[in-house]
Image 1: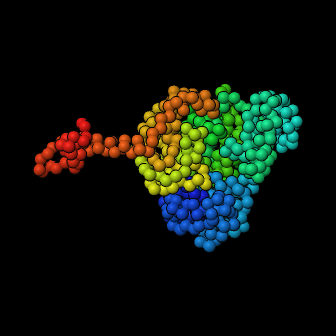
Image 2 (image 1 turned 90 degrees about the vertical axis):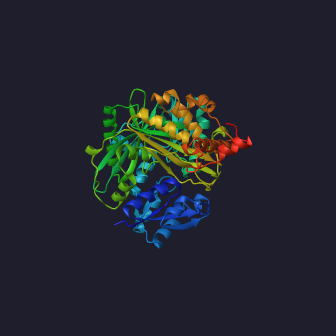
Image 3 (image 1 turned 30 degrees about the vertical axis):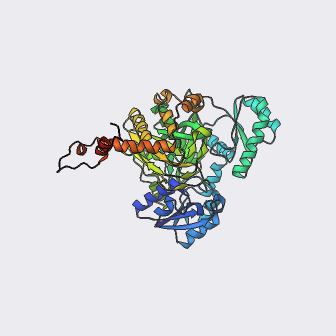
Length: 503
């Protein structure tokens, strides 16, 4: 049985995994870089070990150091979270060599689905629709031009080992091919160590819809319905929701069956995601498979009442999956906003620094997965996402109302964040009506930036003090001056007598 898990990650996902471990009675082990000595995941874990300098390549990407710590602390398993080594087949293979359970799919599955060209071929064989495009590595600009003409513009040039929008270029005409080809290959090599690129027909007005899947070691595979991920900026997701406001129940069932077929084609074990592009006519195409937990997994948990991390651990432990397709029913609606330390007025430049004040919203149907706390210094070395704000309600309308409220309540000072930008999105008519696709942010870019209002730190501090004074002055306890009921605040008395505070 798995009794101790090392979490080979940092930030909110490391804390999120540890919380499930705690509930299951499993000990958690944190690894951290020099920059993360005071990070929340380091403080939360049962044990914590420094594995290197701030640079990710010397710490969170250092396979041998992580394996060394896992063996030294006698961890039974390693959970990779997402990002870093989560889809690294060599890491999964090293775990297997050391008899450490890797909480994820087999390395052979990662290799089969991590290569986008190989994955396309697998999906075609499994009967899953794919976007028209090439099945081989592009070898020259001339070949790319010829194939672009055959497929028809616009086309998307993609890195075979890519993800997160890296190594991806949209091409509208022949004149753009050479520059796109050169830039995509260069970015792919820098990001993934592999400059293989291929072409796909660009699906116009597409929706990015993904299906969560689970597979155990006994051949059972199910899907856990879909997530709508079309609110994106530069191919990076910003807001996700479940269920999708775009697809109907018939399409949902059909796409879910194809997602299961895709997972079975590679003997998938654990939690994964089959991503689709869906055009305005509801024609859908396989996009890629993510062989790990997704950032947006909480909205699936909220609408299904399933803890995906616990399911991952049970599957890795060899247990037969207790869930079946028949008992997977969506209830209500969930929305997630990614909270990032970035300056939206400076082209979303990362905004590291010390968090001076943090007021997190709460109330019914509110969940925050975060690693931030007052006094913590957001490091410059890693992804700027500091947390995720998730709401659940009985209907999409109520969920949007709730998200508006909690974004209004969310206050962070000391660093710049994208909270005001998110407020603008959820107040946009097309979002409220559910009439959006992956072109939403470019289409509304002027409105979104006009709607952003920022305040200096001094202004925010004054506003918070004034609000607290107003709260104290309006309490019933302050409305009486009897000896038996003394006011809890003397602000009103002081202001009236001294003439400093005007009422």
